Length: 319
Image (cartoon, rainbow, N blue to C red; front, side, top):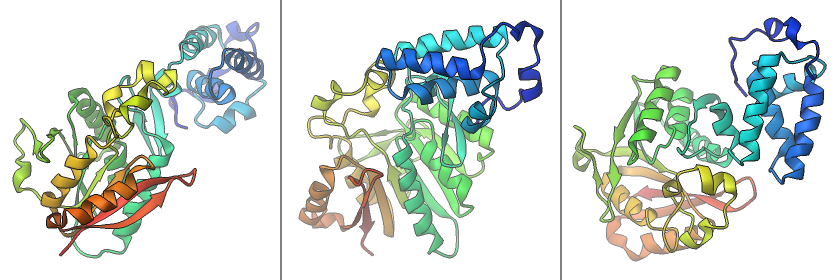
């Protein structure tokens, strides 16, 4: 985990006012028990992330290594305030304002969707596919970029990649631009506000005409949770995250159907669509592309997530 790295460890723990303050070990013990008693998920990890952020430790391991160090009064006051946010079920990612995704660190602000660890798998799948290809840069379109996690991780890891990242939410686009700038990827990642319509067209008020664009790869982590399941989600999600980034309609396929239709038009022959889905969706998607053979798409593979659920679908455009 990357936190406020500009704070030196020496300065962080050498304040005379810290004499009567608790140690990191005492704070972790106190707050992990408090979180656990109030049914806050991942109580130990929650307080360790908050401590690391407040003190300026770069790795969670350092929380253990410096367990006997005392906080300053200012740090303790900040920590108490942030812990109250966690008791209110605010996600840790929003509390500390950033999170690691693969090998990059992203700024995160509510209610922009928080990238999940399993989504790193789709980046790995695409990078592996890229490693087999030779020649020019590959043009990739990400639909629904959120904080920019997928596009920025791809561009950061491969110099073969040029990405266009789009989102219907202007605040998501602004956050992706900020993360892109911090990572120095402006030359290879373009961010545009655009909306995927029900008829499978991608429309933007900006200068780019998506009707004439074609791509080697299209990738998306769209809203795919069936509406009836939204109320079953954890408070961290229901209260703080933008539910529009999660709600996939009655069957969870509200965005996935037009995404497939758009990809049929926008993929270059031999191109690929990679999409994160609900485990119930791969069978339907395979049926859909077979039934509508005029799309000239083929279901290539379904990949598992960390829990062995069907989670990622690869579709190719026939040459």
